[in-house]
Image (cartoon, rainbow, N blue to C red; front, side, top):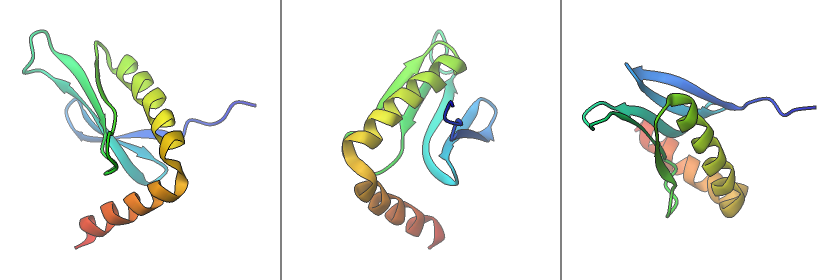
Length: 95
């Protein structure tokens, strides 16, 4: 049985999305129209050193690259380190 897709996009603006895993914000994907030609930029926003970033020619490609990079990042850092980073991120959003 395939694992359900846990990553979701939430609109910030036109061609600008926050990436969520469950209810936790973990990244951003946006179209950089200021570039010639325009490209999709993505990045993991979890505050642990070395978060992955990248670019793609389409939104679908950006989502696929983000998903792969995110899975590797989670595996590298583990749930305990991620939980600490989430707590710090969420505390800053509520204060």
